Amino acid sequence: MSSGRILIVEDEERLAEALARELGRAYETAVAHTGGDALFLAETQRFDLVLLDLNLPDMDGIDVAAQLEGNPADVIMLTARSDVGSRVRGLYAGAADYVSKPFDMEELLARVYARMRARSRGGQMRWGPLELSFADRSCFVDGAPVELSAQEYHLLALLLEYPDRVFSKHTLEDRLYADQQPESNAIEVLVSRVRKKLTKAGLDRVIETIRGLGYVVRGEGP
Ligand code: CA
Image (cartoon, rainbow, N blue to C red; front, top):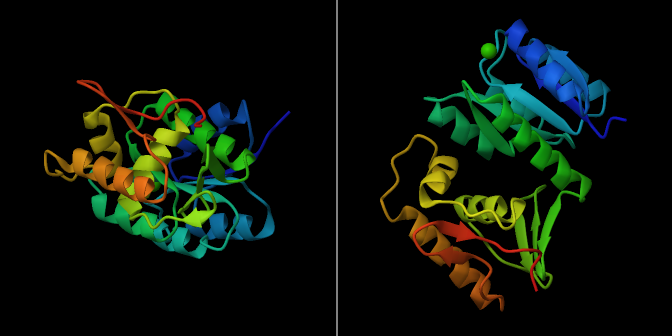
């Protein structure tokens, strides 16, 4: 019945329980209330995903994320909305994604489902000849590597993860820049840099502009 195992690391017991209940509908779950327990469980059992609160009683969640770097599980961090610094350090430490607290349960579930779906496809996303790998955040066109910055990778991964969904500039700013105030043309610049790199690699028209609405990657590619 279950299609994956998730480790929930959260010291607020009621929240941990709510997460275990919701995620338990689709996955097998285990709960750790401390960083120490989390690392012990992650070493002794196999998980596909670790949902990691960064504010733990015994350890800095970033240190937990860093120690999980060699673990096959993907890490999604739960961070305070204002804690941009930790979020960025967590992404550098190898976490795949983050959700800001307080979060909307539906959104958190959607992010978890998306990540688990991607894993079941072998940790890769494909769009025609374009391939993104979650494990090392690499990008290939027809098997040839394309160097993307972290921000460029995240933009492309987000669009590919939800084909046919139009992302507004505002949504992309929220997802890619969190609480920082990016330049007003930051997303346009980012999109244009990604397009340029993909075009150079021989792949045109991956990201479409929908005038007045935003950006989309359509279907499954050529
Ligand atoms: Ca906490």
